Length: 268
Image (cartoon, rainbow, N blue to C red):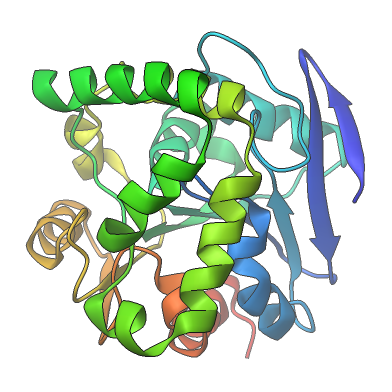
């Protein structure tokens, strides 16, 4: 897997296809392979770049704390090294959506569009932030097994848990393969992330929102409220999917993204 040397990090990424550049960002606790199906379906028509964020997958780990600001800066540096000067379409799942918000805030001129998948704009409540910090400590003590056991029932829809054992197993393996130090640093940063809700009315590029109808973390109601706040945005609700729609409903997500890209890039 190619690795780029960026300020403070060795960033691993997959880079497939040619055409309009599309960067897809994974969630927590995942890696770039969460987008594998969409890469396969979209790469014949677009340049699809799926990095492992700092602290995840094959990228290097920064101890202590990593912030959404750092991840957004990493993406901008990645584009510079890849010599991508044209505006990109940036998509983010869950935590990747937080990075997308920050990228819009800091690098608006580099964006042609946004895809916000199963994410939220609000900051953590004090209770949620405290829970992240506690989880960070536990991960460094115990490793990743408890994280998979704890998070899988929340990340996936009941229908996925009941009838798609291959999806459950794939996500479990991704979670278990992660670096506990990277996970802990991420949780500390996420606990401090800003409230992006005031940013929503300022988003003035084409925006697609995708949400699983059984998402218990970023709910349908919450995602629809975000869509109403982003002028001109569109939202797609995915049946029988929870918080990890690219993995749970890969075909439906791929078609929604492809249709959006056709409209956004004037690619008929």
